[in-house]
Image (cartoon, rainbow, N blue to C red; front, side, top):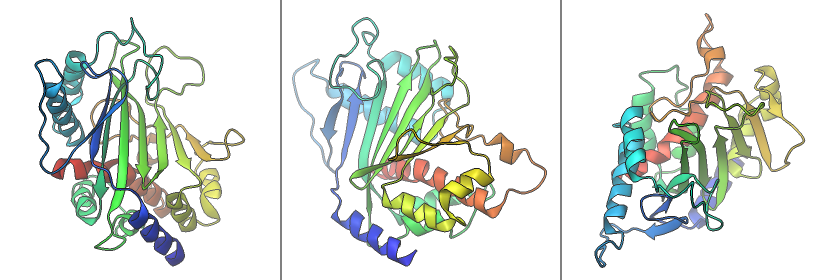
Length: 290
C-alpha cells in the first residue's frame, strides 16, 4: 500500500489545479460552459449578459452540497432556474450526459481539512471505520492537495426532479460515476437503484483493491454486489447499491440489505461504504469553504 500512496502523492502533485464552475441548461446557459473563478472574481457585462446566472449557480451549488436545502427546496430552484427550452430545442452538441440534463460542475482542490469536517458529521450517524482507507486518501500528507472536479446531472424526465448522474474526477482522470437511471427494464419511474462505475485504471481503484482480501472482484462476490463483467475493461461496475437519486445530499446511500440486518456489518462492508461516501462528499466540503 505504501507504494501506491507514494504514487498517489506524486500524481496529485503533478495534476492540474483548476478553480471553476460549469453550467449546462442552467438559465440562459445552454451548452456546457466553464467559468473560471479566483479568490477575487469580478464579473461585468451588459444587462442580460448572464452575470446573475453565475451568482445563482454559486448559490445553488452551496445550498445543495452543504445540505442546507432539502429535496423540496432544491426542486423549487431547479424548476425556476433550469432552461425551459431543453426539451423543445434539445442540444445537438457541446453537452455532457444527455441533451436535456441540467448540469452543474465544481472544480477545486480538497484535502485533510475537508476530510476531518466530513468525518466529524458522518461519524455521528453511521457505523464508521476510523483511520481507514478514506483517511489514508484524503490525509495523504498535510501539504498534498487533491485536485477534483464534480459533475452532477439533474433530470425531471418523469415529472420529478432527481439526480440522474454523478461524476468525480480526482487529479486529471475520472475516478467514478454513478448512473441513477440505469434500469434493467425501461421503467418509466425513478427508483432507488443505481449503477456505480469505478475506473480500474485510476490509482484510487488500485488503493481500494489492496484493502480487501483477494481484491475488489472477490469482495463484490462475497457481498453479492452483482458486479457486471465483460462490458468495459476500463470500468468496474456494481449494480443495486441502493443509491438515492433524491435531491437531499446528506445521506445519498440507503444500503438496506446491509443496514437492516440484525448483525453489525462486516469491517470490509463498512470500509467500502465509508470510502465510497467519502469520495462523494469530502470534495463537496471544499466548495463550501471557497
